[in-house]
Image 1 (spheres, helix red, strand yellow):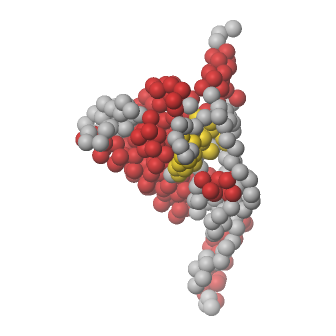
Image 2: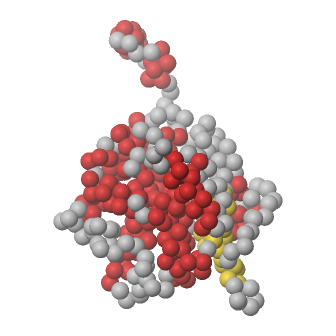
Image 3: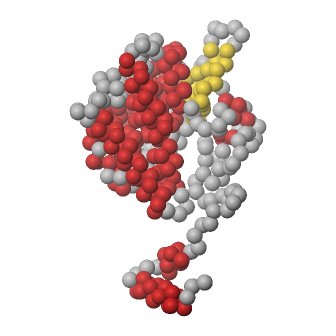
Length: 333
């Protein structure tokens, strides 16, 4: 129990704070009881963008098969950074190897819970996008391979189709270990950027200073790792593996490139002062100018300008049509 003196001191402080312009709401927040951790956790839904789909159990919630297009490769995804990792690689591979890497891409709306359909869960028990299903042609009996987790998908695609080792160094090549190390850097670090910083900065129903500060610090540390590595005196530059562009760049660019280019979380570029990471910015712009990367950004994207989004992709002609639309918008009258 608070002493009379303590209560009096708190009242005087409250009056002073209101006099200095603190709102009653802010004042109440100051005195709100702190969360006490129970001995046993109980589910309690919040009010963030993902509250309706968050749950502590796995498995399907409704029965619905996945759609299937005409190509051997079927991608089920959304144009978030994790989805863009895979679509940029696919579009880059198509520019080199042609129709052999053609694919169908179907949109999975994670905000509406599409990832909990019976068909999606069969392809990925973890109910996360993206997932790839490969119906291999000319194999008897027909071989169907599912691949989930972005790094696994990217490695699978390169091992199957990148026969010239353009984006994945061959086994025995010293660069292979470097490429895999940076690929896994993104796989292990990006959750701190997305699920940590991004969630508490953009999506959480209440702004928690500790959480925002904690993940801002870690995100800036990661940017500094990349900036030092990509500098002329670092081991990288112009790409993560030096002169060779690899899948590590595509994976990393989807998250950290989008962040420094101001496309990830509204206001985060200013908040994190991304302009300070000059070498990351130069690297991000270098990749952003690539045709395959620009195409990959548009696939399964359901927001933004019409020429920058393609809900479903079934042929390279779908993207060519968007490019013509974009050209018409930039032509002088």
